[in-house]
Image (cartoon, rainbow over all chains, first blue to last red; front, side, top):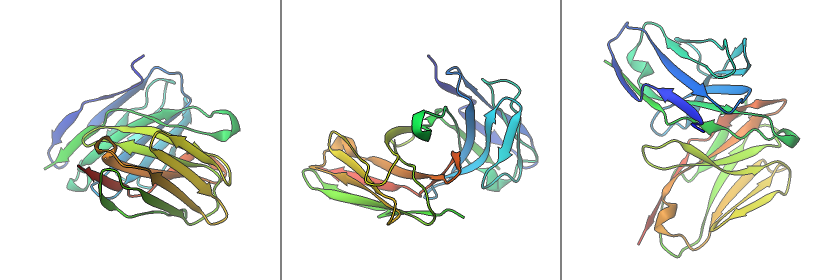
Length: 115
Length: 112
């Protein structure tokens, strides 16, 4: 199994450009997430989804959009890239285990630089 | 708003020594997770703690949860170099178990 696959791994954008980070999971997980990781700041939740067709905002959603048309895919769209969006982005998926445990499986990450 | 604080944020220790990483959180929750991240890599799950008094152990790492004190600890016994990594605790938002709030992480360096 591939688990959670993110593309691209690295990308440099100019200010004002747009792009989509792709995320696919093959574990039939119902929950999917996008986090960003900035140095020394831990992970911040951008958006999440509890199933196909359902998305919701996390802590830092401004400047991003998501969609969840299938169980497998959860792309993250950056519109009008800004230097503040320079970060490492992690996609994750999970399923709700018994007793409510929700262990996340993370992708390898996408390092984005906006210049 | 749920806040999660870890300390220390940086920890340098010698092989063979013991130490504890602390994770405090600000509002009620009964689900806490520990993850490990190696430099330049993704995060991998270490422990899931689901109830007050829960204790989990794997090798030289032991995690515990005190929901009344809103505190989890990650204890390292007889550290070895391979444990060098950044350790994150993450707390589930009560009533919204699909959302986690992460601490800033503790960067552990184990020196020979």
